[in-house]
Length: 92
Image (cartoon, rainbow, N blue to C red):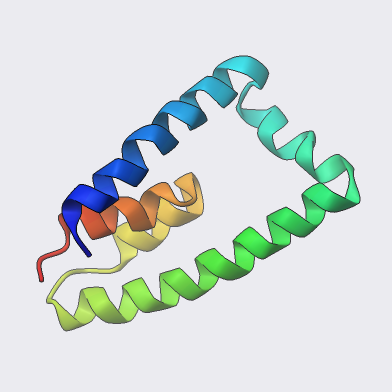
């Protein structure tokens, strides 16, 4: 994937995430969204999507001689930042 495109996604997403955490706090990102059915659905969808991405990252990292665990842990801790940073640092 083009690194410029990844940066065009990563930078505004980081700004949005920073703003959201500043507005409600880190814990409220989860507690507020998980307090109603729509938020639960979005959370489950995100877990499914990121699980699929982590599987792809694991295989891709190993195929490129990289250790996949840091990227999987980053995804578990930081959500979409993990895959975006992986793509930004991935060699073609």
